Image (cartoon, rainbow, N blue to C red):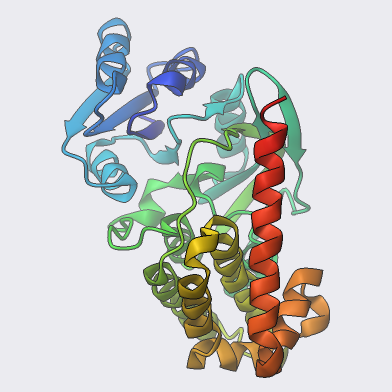
Length: 344
């Protein structure tokens, strides 16, 4: 068996059929599709079973809800292919994707295959991503190269954009206690194991973009998990010899940008009546020792405009509360304006 395509499924009945069909039409005797129904409460489980009845290369596993990482791990254990590809159940793969990947494997015998991706809404493909990489690379100084080209740019932190040789990831599973960035943590471990890779500049993966498919909720535990994931990244960087002053500054700049993304979610999603509680939560983040360390180490000139303003407000505590209240008020006005627009 050459390919095992693993799809964790949870309450995506609206999109699931198209996902399965994009894969099923390419399955042959050297490939299998493993659908892991993670305790769905809609019709997703029945849809999986219906396709499995008509296609001998489709296998279905039903389990109690345990999360996407546990579902992927279950798929890994059940798979038989020499290469693994993880696919989300609301996305699709491009036509001839498995053929193109097979040709790349025959030509290069790569431990890992990278490829481009595109985004789409209801039947409309509107964005395609290209990443400048060599088509073939033997990694002698692999860890530094991977950090500089992949982790710094965050282009290939999703496992959906990777085809993995099973032998290189033997015994490697997704961490089920990490919820906000399981792909990132898994990818870091993968990159530390591979000896070579090849790159296809063709969009083989298709992301479905649905702004209403998830709810952004701000919780302090997300910041704690964010710090944990970033600590794992720093441990890898140190192990890989990517701990120069330049690397530290770049790491800190990315750290602050990502942390402020959590804060912007808090500003956007908090109700005005809970503004005091929201500001206290944000203050508990920005005065955290690790946040302060990375803030003083980062290169503020490389921060986006809002992050620059925010960083300067943090460094001047007299201005911070006023900046936060003003930001909350601006987000409130933005939400009201969107609400008015939706009426027309």
